Amino acid sequence: MIEIERKFLVKDRSFENEAETSRTIKQGFLSTDPKRTVRIRVEETRGYITVKGISTDGGVSRFEWENPLSKEAAEALFKLCLPGKIEKTRHIVTVGSHHFEVDVFDGDNQGLIVAEIELSDPEQVFEKPAWLGAEVTGDQKYYNASLSQHPYKDWK
Image (cartoon, rainbow, N blue to C red; front, side, top):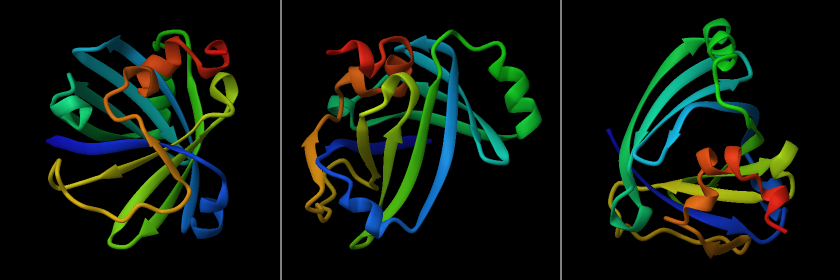
């Protein structure tokens, strides 16, 4: 249940030509405490509840527990979430033997594009596509829980 993930900004939208699938996601948070976030997610026809622990290894790894919910249950729990929702379209792009999840944010975070890659080891080597920008792993302002409370539109 330990998630190992690195996060990057995206330079341009050329990844869209390589995307295998895309889906809309909306997220809300029951808790945004940095030591334990509790997220409700609705993806098209299904829902999820996710609990994440505090980050370690410079933000590369942290505890993550996720369980599926019916869309109806997720929508009901969404009503209990804190103010500030996340809206995004997630594109799955395969580069070499890895999958990047590229999130194009909408709503209050419009203009922000972030790519994440899950790894089996914090030091694992992977191919970096030309559209991949600066690494922001461990920078908490790019965590979805933070973006829900301090959206990208307010950074300027």
